Image (tube, rainbow, N blue to C red):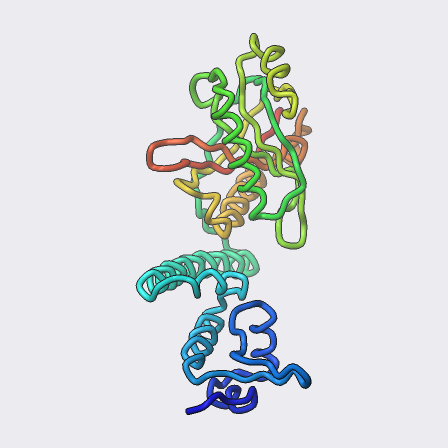
Length: 279
C-alpha cells in the first residue's frame, strides 16, 4: 500500500488528527512527508505499528514525555519497563485503598492504628543543612544532591542514631504546594566552625534538644509517598490521645517540622516519619 494522507492514517491507526499533530510536534511520530505548500501530512503504512504502540502506552497513562524515551528501547527492554511500571501502579493502588479505608473509617468515627507510634529523646545537635522550596520529586532530588556533596566532603560522623541524615518538611509539599524542605546532616560540635568554612554553600545551625514521636516506615519510604498520610494520621491520633495540643509545649510540633530520618544500610535507606516537640 502506498503512503496515505493524515485522514486515512487517522482512521487506520484510530488516532485523531489532533493527536497525530501533537505527536508530530513532540517528535514521537513524524509524518513521512509534508507537502511544502499546504503542509499536508503523509504517512507510510509501516508507521501504523508505532502509532498503535504510542496509543497503547497512553492508555496505560504513561506521560508523553516518558514515551519518547520508551520508544527508543528494543521490544524486550520496553516490555520490562512496562511491566515494572505496572507493578508500581498496583502497589500505588494498594496504598490508595488503605488511604480510602482509613478516611472512610475516620468519617464514620472509627479508628484503627496503622502504625505503632514510639517516642525518643533527641539531643541538641549541630547540623549542616540546605533548604529550598520544592515539589515532591524535587525534594528527593535535593536530598541526592545534598548527600553527594557530603560524600565528596568526607565529613566526620556523629555516632549512633543522632548522627543520621534527616529531612524536615516545613510546609505542605505536593504538586500544588512547594513547601520548603530542609536536608540536614549532624556534625561534631567541636568541628562546626571548620566545616562551616569548608562548605560555605551550606547552612550551619543548632537543632534544640527535643522529643520525637515517630513511626517506622521501612526501606525506601521516600519512594512510597502515598504511605505518608497514613503515618501522619497515626501521629495525629497519638498526639490527640496524648493531648499535646492542651499541654502548653515549650516547642510545638509545627515549630520543629515534620521530619524523615534516613538510616542508610546496605539494603537501602531505612526511614522513619516523625513529629518533634518539647514539653
